[in-house]
Amino acid sequence: MDPINLADVLAAFNNAGVPAAAVGKVTAGMGVSIKVNGKVEVSGETPVLRDVWEATSFELEKLQSAEATRAQEQAGLKARTAPKWDLTYTPVSTPRWRTEVDNKHKVAIIREEGSNGDREMAAVMFQSGLEPWDVTMSDLAAGRTTLDQFRGIVFVGGFSYADVLDSAKGWAGGIRFNPSVKAQFEAFYNRTDTFSLGVCNGCQLSALLGWVPCLTPGSPLPDLEQPRLVHNESGRFESRWSMVQVQKDSKSILLKGMEGSTMGIWVQHGEGKVHFPNEAVKQTVLQNGLAPIRYVDDSGTQTEAYPFCPNGSPEGIAALSSADGRHLAMMPHPERAFLGWQIPYAPASAGIDPKGMGPWVKLFQNALEWCDAN
Image (cartoon, rainbow, N blue to C red; front, side):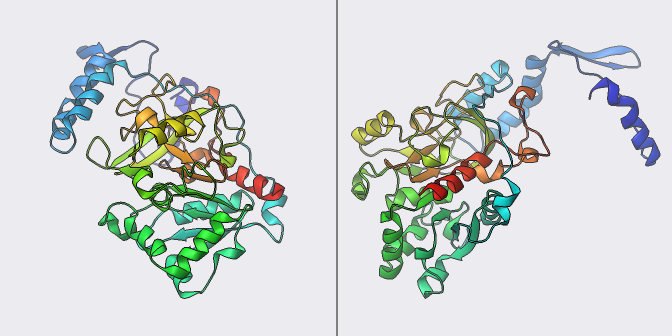
């Protein structure tokens, strides 16, 4: 707490009838000192004391995660620093008139049994000036709605069919083995005026459908060469605030103007490691800007090290894009970091206003601008 606010904070508690007292202060150094009745009872350097504090937690980690990742995180704890942010743009609100006009571009927020995140996705789409529609797979199968009216579709996150068939495989089967539904998705994908975004479970689905990386527009890779998402190296579900960087050679229309930026984002998945059955496909993806988002460490350096890269993806890959840039699939959740108050940590230099916009709102504003231009 800033010392200049201390009196006001204590007064607020006192006025509310809540006992409160200042019991310590933060210093710029690494030392920690705890006194009782004026006598120092605990003292030492922050990294050393933190290791002691975390020791029990890491013993429990041995029982629920892979030993290699557990050891890697524990060994690296002493070297952790404040994560480096570097935004190449300033997050701003969508002009109010854009959110109030008639005839907005329609976006289908598609969900399946077990999906979640659809409300956050609808909220950011609306805030960005697009018109979100709640569309279930049963709506499409029953003909209650069709995809031909939409400019964009979003496959949301969650646990379709509880992941019992592996992540998104049940969802993918509902598309690939239903002729009428499959035809709708193929027609949507083949239009030149459409875009798609797959997030988390939706990212896994986009890969299973062959929508990303799709090295040649209109020609998905053979199933045996198609990249897919497999279990995290840690062997468990990872829910973390991670740092990522948008690559400067990104082909994605949704990341326009964000290239070179390093920032935080929420991660929640158990199967997020990108697996390339074909090494040549991997090299083509890397060489052609089709892996546009990478996990980075505290210094902003691309990494595969745990926990910075929470799943062990090669080259720290966090997203895949189609060659034409219209389709993006990413494991982290941009819809959960589009408002300033959703950001748990950002340095003052990042310029994030807790009452304003978060860094990921631009991805959705890019969708609006692309629809306007196309």
